[in-house]
Length: 84
Image (cartoon, rainbow, N blue to C red; front, side, top):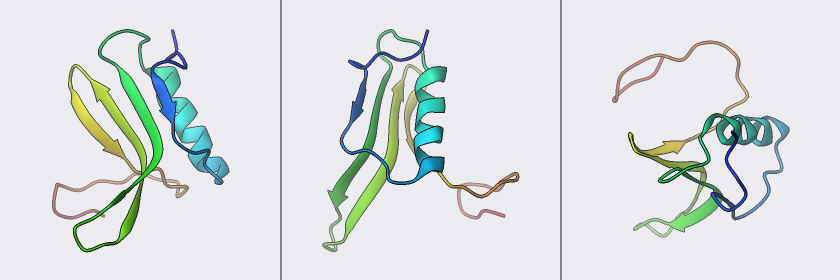
């Protein structure tokens, strides 16, 4: 069962079709049960004063994950320091 509206908090609607599709994909893949939550399209102010957007913050039993949606096709690989 897909994530219900009570578990998916959309702070703003994305203006990018690929991003809306990716967020819908995330919501469809998460079980509609505790502790699963999805927060999308919100902003925060960093220590340097810059305003930054988070596409998705996913909370599950496995952990908390920040997701950045991109429209580029292909496979992305790397480690926690570099991406190819």
